[in-house]
Length: 215
Image 1 (cartoon, rainbow, N blue to C red):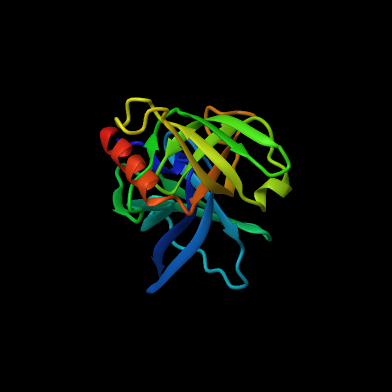
Image 2 (cartoon, one colour):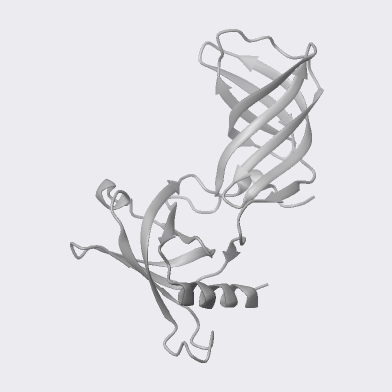
C-alpha cells in the first residue's frame, strides 16, 4: 500500500463524495482518527441529512499545497448526532495525484532563520522546501504579531550548490502562512509554514537548480 496521504501535514481540504438515492453528495470533512482498517471523518450535521446506505462506493479528494490526491473507497457506515456526522470509510489502498504546484516539496533539513524589524528572530531547521516557501517544526508557538508581518528569511544551502554562490546563504522576504498541530511523531510540536515574497530572479534560479539536484 502507498503512503497514506491522510497523514501528511499540508492538507488544506478533504472532500468525501458519494451517491445516495440517485443524488450526488460532496461533503467537506475532517479526519478525526484512523486505524489499520478504517478512517473516521466528521462534518457538521446539515439541516437536512439523509443517512446513506452502508458499504457504498465513495471517493476521497484530498487537497494539499502540492496538488490533489484522489482515491476510491467504501463508505462503510455513518452516525449522526446533533452537532456532527461521523463517516466510517475504508482505508485507501492507492492514490491518483494531480500536481498543482510549479515544483513539488522536497523533504530536506537546512538551517534557516527569520528576523523581524523589532529584533525578534526564529532559528530552525527546515522540514521541507519548495520554490514557494519552507516549513519547519517548532515547540514554541509563534506570536500572532509575527503571523501578520513579514520578516527576512535566511536559508543556508550547501556551499557547493553553485560555483558563483560561495557562502550558500539566500535571503528573501517571508511571511507566515499557517501552522498545523497533532502531526504523527511530532508530539508537542507544530509544523509552521512560511512563504517567500518577491524572490529575486537570480536567487530563484539558484534555488531551482539546487532542487533539481535533489530529484
